[in-house]
Amino acid sequence: MQESPVAIPCPVCNQEGEVYMIAHIDEIPYFGEHTQVTVMCHSCGWKQTDFIPAEGQKAGCWSLLMVDSKQLKSRVVRSSSCTIRIPELDLQVNPGSNATGYVSNVEGVLNRFVEVINMVLRDLQNDVSTKIMEDQTPEFLQTVDEISQLEGILTRLTDIGGTQSEPFTIELLDPHGHSMIIDDAATERELTTEEIATLPTGPDPAVFSA
Ligand SMILES: [Zn+2]
Image (cartoon, rainbow, N blue to C red; front, side):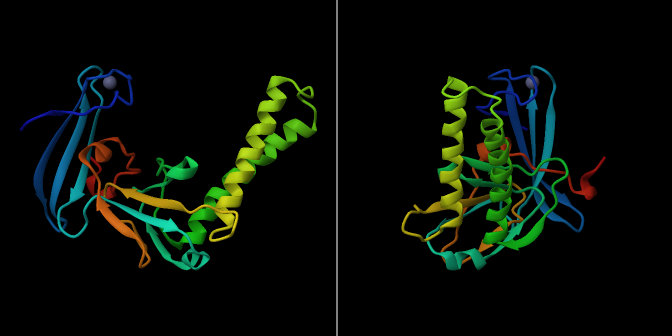
């Protein structure tokens, strides 16, 4: 089996040029043919193995450009291994160690972002209004600036198709290929080997636990 270098620093020890990958095809009973991908760090010994279904479920990235509020009703299937990104707004939700999959619609996905942003906003506004900071200090001005940036993001997330709002893209990146956006305008592409190696995948399916 051949190791190929992966152009990322090790997620554990941060060493550059020490991360390698081995991929091979494997047959698992009742689960079908899979590609088994092992990523490892030669510096600290970190190692992670993942299984990518071969048939029908390719590691994929689903994208939907949000231009119309009707798209809020489009269905979204998000698996436990899925990362959600809105690149234009620099937003990302990783699967995390306790992630669970869910079926929702685009509005439900966006609401999760809105809730988190509102929480951060409340904290910042609190800092400003309770005068933890002196008026006009650099810290104060920076916080005011952050508040207005977040308010801009909120407007874009909630005013889709509005006159003030520029379109943005929702991306579902799923190394296990179990996520999708069901909308006529949604597109799918395969993830690159590098993306698969760097994306968090969430909890391992029980069937693969040692
Ligand atoms: Zn390492």
